[in-house]
Length: 137
Ligand code: THU
Image 1 (cartoon, protein in one colour):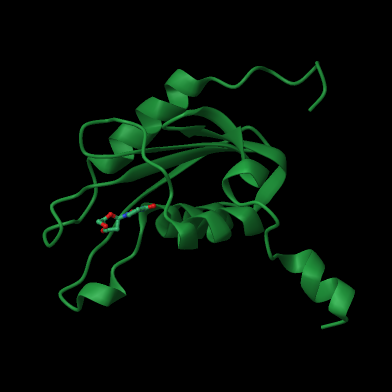
Image 2 (cartoon, rainbow, N blue to C red; image 1 turned 135 degrees about the vertical axis):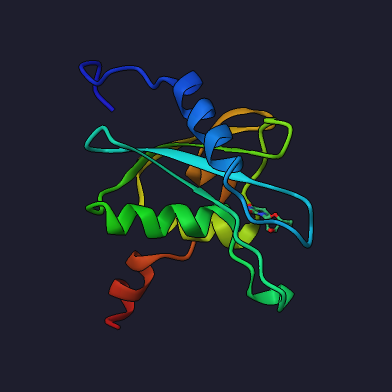
């Protein structure tokens, strides 16, 4: 990103993730999760986990966030934060890293349990749209 881009307000993203976590529907795991992201047009989107009596059908917070991204105009994710029920940073699960990768801006940043990392660091050698294009699919 260029120097002219505003610095990322990680505190605001964390607050948005905590707010989203408060909306989680997690009666089976009792593990509420909230996620928030900055989109490349400046808006902030969020999501929470939504579980189901049929346990495997439950949706992660990132899934909810990506749906919100598309429903609110699309765009690319620039920065992302995810929290558990105590407001502590939470690593996106493997499936959710893939979900985020699909919609990531180049160099997308994540607030992780071990500091700020790029999407390429948390999902190295990712499979994505480019591989399908190269194959001609
Ligand atoms: N969960 C998320 O929402 N995101 C993650 O990246 C990890 C796990 C949710 C799924 C389930 O509702 C609860 O956390 C316990 O696994």
